[in-house]
Length: 325
Image (tube, rainbow, N blue to C red):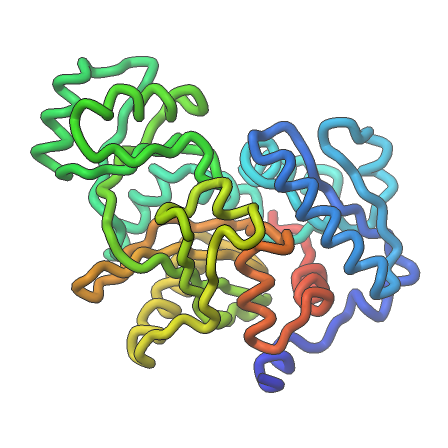
């Protein structure tokens, strides 16, 4: 895969690494804090090993003075107050270049409902859905009727702005709907009720300033559902890299992922999650602008399959750090 690696050269920041101070920003205040700390730690270790000057900044305990001391920010935050455009906006004001997507893209992508509306308007395949407002809720029997009429059971109920499957419930029958809405409502006022489609779970990672799709991964959780435990517990999930797909299906899925990346204004790195139904239709489930970089994370696995080791992956992302506004 040398040709893919060559696409990401040259590395301008690598030549200045002894003069630039890179701040790895992780932790934060979201429900994904622990995953973010793991992501940040892995990035910090990789950059140090490559000879970069780094400082680790936990956004829950770190000081504003730490921010002002860095030249470049490597964002390793997940969820709200970090992956949603808030920290990106602050870095823009401070004129500190940062990795990943900008303010608008980050805010839009973390909002699942808005993302689905944009995908629908663009004609990109995504499962049928409806929206539930927990602060102005409809009676549960009315919600049930709408689900039966417009979507059909089973459905998957998600908080609008959470990641790592936090607060998600698969609702297979009407009697489970109330509890599913309540669980999602604990994490967000707005709740996405989406048709649950049985099929193969796939993910396409997009990398680089001139975006390229990495090998597709098929995800096979041993529990049958790719939940928080399956994502972050070693040996709980099998990953097939590259996924066993026909060439035309691989091209189709990667093309849709690239369209999502471009439509939503993503920069440097994104991951697009799919479900491939039994009829061979790939549906976009979610887009992620700041994918995890833990030992069990998907983007490092896809990069490795393309001949890109973890250190090089981190450098590619760092090399495209810039202000977006």
